[in-house]
Image (cartoon, rainbow, N blue to C red; front, side, top):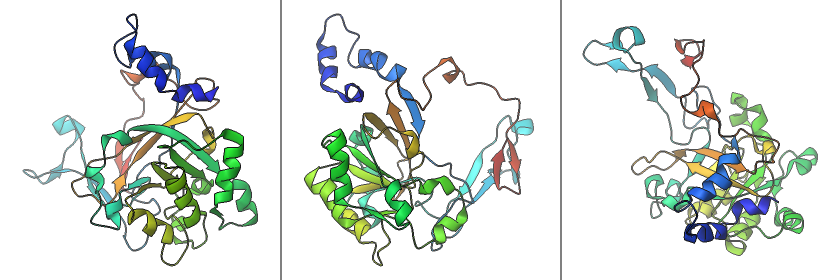
Amino acid sequence: MFRSLIAFGLFVALAGSASAAPGLWQAYDKYFAKAKYIDLTHTVAPDVPVWHGFGPSKFEPTINPETGKPYTYQADGFEATHYDLSTDQLGTQLDPPAHWDPNYPAIDELPATYAVRPLVVISIVPQLERDPGYHLQVADVRAWEKVHGRVPAGSVVFVRSDWSKRWPDPALAKEDTFPGVSLDALKFLHEQRHILMHGHEPLDTDTTPTLEGEAWLMHHGYTQAEGVANLDRVAETGCLVAIGYPKFKGGTGGYARYIAICPPSWKYGTTIGPDDAPLPRSDKALHWDAKAGTRVR
């Protein structure tokens, strides 16, 4: 039943119908307006796990250069935040190939066609019970295909490990043993199944000394997602993924947001509703917390 959500051929028929709403609007009304939406993204904060080689980041209130004081709701009617980010490899990410190879696209050079893709979720959780450092293998992909059919060309494949359930424990960035994706599996997915990209929950692709998987991807023009969350709440097949990221000039990494879009019958997620606009007002005001180094409620 999930396959109907990604039957994009239907969109063309709808667009050509004299009685249909213009373009893709009817497809939106029929599928997306009733779909379940699941955020697969960690919140970026100063204390999230990050490789020690990048160092810490810092959030501060934006300072009015004329007064030398922070903007405040009381005095200025608004507030703003200054972000001192140590790296573009922070939190949930989208790695463009320029991260490792300057002859391939940077984050601002990625095509708009990345926006929405079929989403495949392959779980290696059972294997991790036996081996905490298990890496996705070609056999795992083939086992998934025996149940769900061939991995769609142009899709995004996220590898579920549940590693992200311990987020934002800073100790995660110091561990040498963590779930990964083998080079053979990456080559199979890209060269045999022709996927757009893969994603994983940890902050590195594999635990090899040379990060061989990430090196191969970047030097062959492929992107990847890192630090993905909440894959335990997404169906293994039949959902889509919406991909968003800032367009930094010459950026070698991207703070990304991934949203799974699943069928209305799926047990997890939120649906479009009346509270989307205007957004609900909270009885707890957002305020600066010096100890947390960010705004909190």
